[in-house]
Image (cartoon, rainbow, N blue to C red):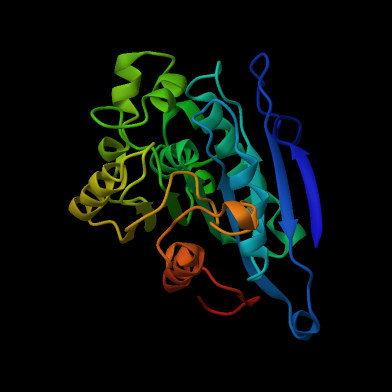
Length: 285
């Protein structure tokens, strides 16, 4: 496996707010003999870890990337700026990462038209803003909307709501306590008909981010006519990531529904249904 790391500010020329830091790590699977027969292109995924916009969780970074590279995808993990930085700092970093992935697609054998983004918890909120605010004024100087807009979204136990039962700390951190900004960033209000397909998953008894975060966004997606899939698993704590020994010691595996560890396989099948797959270069999509 090839692993490359980049300072997204240096690589893209993005203006760096004081104290901001954004590192993009690329995980590229080893090519097999089959790849040498014809030039093949792979899909890519931008992974946005959670952490309440306070930090980026390592649990939702490399372990997730490894699941995608094992299936032939290129995986990019973005460690983005958190509090005291507020919106739109992290969104601008994610938008610049999408631009970087597409501009460097030939370098990594990636199809630039098959770039998904997935996020966990607060990273799910960032992922959802990336998928809905790709043409917002805050990112207009970074790239054209089509270079920023993901081709599919995966929202994993995401923070989406700025009101009612939600993860107040994430909303406070991303908005800096600005109530009007927090209201603007409530994802169910940002859903739009021209956004990409969305895969959501949550656990029914998530004690940190209530599953209503995913349910209400699913309703908004349905009303907007956006293709989506929603999976609510019966049991499991918040922050499960890939829900196996990669992120939990075997003696400390949490009690979860048996099908929770299958979420990424289910997500990948959804992405494939929407056209994101390994294919020969020049093959008609």
